[in-house]
Figure 1 (cartoon, one colour):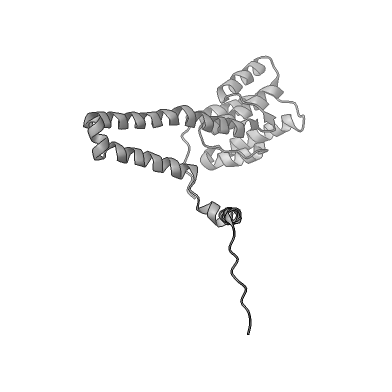
Figure 2 (cartoon, helix red, strand yellow; figure 1 turned 135 degrees about the vertical axis):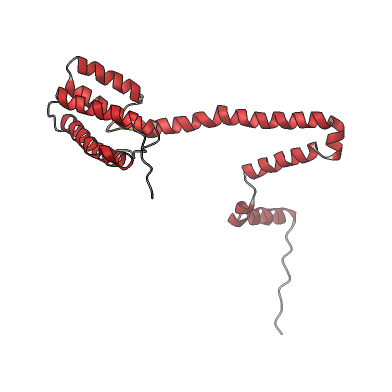
Length: 212
């Protein structure tokens, strides 16, 4: 007759160790509530207690409503103060690399500097800066989201999707940028003026909706 082994009965320390090992398994960690779950539960419980019989009687109906309003206002203020800057900083980091150069200036600042260089006769710098102003202006209007390392030609193609009438002008502006920036061809007043005119038209034109 086969003898069955007696069941293993752990002592206190072994039982605790077995329980800790079991709870450390991934399936238990995944089932554990997140920080946001716990925060939502705490807020819901707060309002439930606030408007319950005991909470309402302790504070009074008007006081309970005022406390609830203050909590909501506090959440809105927190979103404005801490939510928006993080989004702005993220966008600034994404768009700082513009056409092969780290430049955080606004489109208006780039235009001003381009005009200054043009008045001084430095057409190379003026052309590069004005095309960057076009790109930055479209980013600021949420019309472009250039990938890191995007080229002038890529930006021109993407901009042409929302400004199809300006397709030829955008391609010409990108070619002028590449000629000056990479091929070292000398810039001219006419090429700068063409880019500046394109920039001004884009600023004054309402983009077309892109259907996907």
